Amino acid sequence: MANLYDILAEGFPADRTKPAFILSDGTQVSYAELEAGAAQIAGHLVASGVAPGDRVGLQTEKSVEAVMIYLGVLKAGAVFLPLNSAYTKAEVDYFIHDAAPRVFVTDAQAFRDEANDADPLTEAVARKETDLASLIYTSGTTGRSKGAMLSHGNLAENARALHRAWGFTPDDVLLHALPIFHVHGLFVAMHCAFLSGAPMVWLPKFDDAQVLAGLAKSTVMMGVPTFYTRLLANPQFTRRAAAHMRLFICGSAPLLESTFAEFEDRTGMRILERYGMSEAVIITSNPLHGDRIPGSVGYPLPGVDLRIGGGQETGVIEIRGPSVFSGYWEMPEKTAEEFTADGYFKTGDVGRQDPDGRVWISGRAKDLIISGGYNVYPKEIELILDELPGVTESAVVGVPHPDFGEGVVAVVIGVGDEAAMIATCRAQLAPYKTPKRVVFVDELPRNTMGKVQKNLLRDRYSNLFST
Ligand code: AMP
Picture 1 (cartoon, helix red, strand yellow):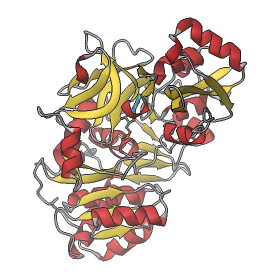
Picture 2: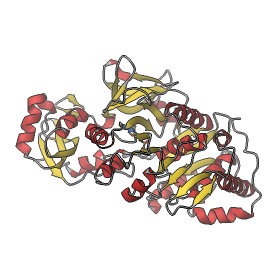
Picture 3: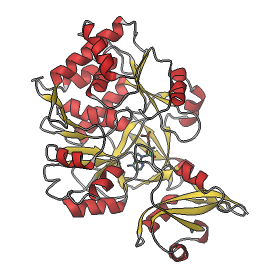
Picture 4: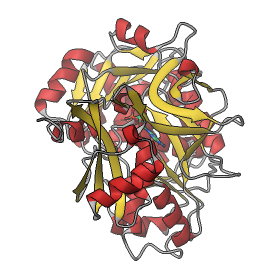
C-alpha cells in the first residue's frame, strides 16, 4: 500500500461520524463526508480521463471542498498542484504552461457539486512510493519558480515522522488557520490531523478573535511567526486563553527569540520551533519532551542525514532522507546543481550544528552579504539590533556600495538614533559587519508565510550608497 491517500485514511477514526472539520459557525464536517467527497471527486477525475501521473491544479480560497479535491486527486493517482490564491493571471499562466495540468480547478465548491453525479472511486489507484503525489512551486524570490516533485513516499514518511515526534493522538484537536496552498498548512498540519483521526478547528485565515475562540476548543496549533506576534499583540491572549492547549508549533520563517520569551512569559508554554521547506517538508524539530531552545530549530527528524557543507563550522545545510524530493519538475540541470555527488540536497540555508546534533540557522545563503571581500551573516547583526531598546525587529541586507562591493544596511522596525545604534553595533562587531546605515520603518515586507522579503529591501535601498 503506497498511495498516500490510503496511508492517511488508515488514520481516520473507526467511527467516521466524528468531525474532521469544525467550522467557525459551529458546523461540523465528518470524516465520513470527507471520505465520500474525496471518493466522488476521484471518480469524477477518472471519468474525465485523468490518468495516473496527470497533474490537477487548484487555485481557490481555503475550504473543506478544496481538501476533498486534494484527497480525491491523490486517490485518483494524479498529482496535486496547489497554487497560491493570490497569484495573478500572468503568474498562473506560467504554472499552467510549466506543469501542463490536465484539469485546473478555480471553484472548489462548483467542482465538488459537479462530482456529485460521478460514481465514487472505492479503491485508491495503486501508486509506488516513488510516484509523484504533488508538485509544489517554491516561493522562490529570484529566477523562475521551480516545481518541487514530492512523491507518495516522501509525504507519507514525513507525515508519520511528525505524527510520532509531536505526540499526536485521536484526542487532539488541531487549530488550522494556515493557507493550504503551501506545504505547512497542506501537508504538515493536515497530515498530522488525518493520521490521528483528529478534528481540525478550521479557520479560513488567521484572525485573532477567531483564533482566540478556537484555542478554547483545540490542543495543538501550528503557525508562522506572525501568528504568534499577532496573538501576543492581543491583550485577551492570556495564560487562561491558552490553558486548553498542549502544544504550539512554529515554522516557515525564523521565530524571534523575543517572541519565544514573551510567549513563555504570557502563557507559561514554550513554542516548539521546527524547520522545513517545500523540497523536504519538515527537516528538523525541537523536541516534544526536552529542551526547546529559542533560536534553534532543534534536531534532524529520525531518518534525516544532515550535514554542513563547505568544511567550515557554519555553511550551507545539506540533507538526505526519506522526505527529500526527487528534483525540480522538468529542470534536470537545476536539479543536478542542487544535489551533491553523494546525493545530499543543498538547502540554501546557512547554519551550524552542535556536536549533539542540534541545528541553528543563520539565514539564506543568497542573503549573505559580501562587504569588502568579507562574508557577513545578517543574522549576527540582527540578533544584536533586536536586543536594543525601541527595536521590535530588524532585517539586515547588503546593497551596492562603491568601495566595498556591498554595504551593510539595517532596516529596523522601531525607533532610535541611527548614530547611536551604529556605535552600539561597532562595539560588538568588526567594522566590516557594522551597519553603515540604519533605516527605520513601520513594517517589513513579508510574503504570505510571514517570511521577510529581503530581495524587496535590497531593491528599495539599492541606491543608498550610490554617489
Ligand atoms: P518554503 O519552501 O516556502 O517552505 O520555504 C522554506 C524556507 O523557509 C527554508 O529554506 C528556510 O529558509 C525558511 N524556514 C522555514 N522554517 C524556518 C525556521 N524555523 N527558521 C528559519 N527559517 C525557516
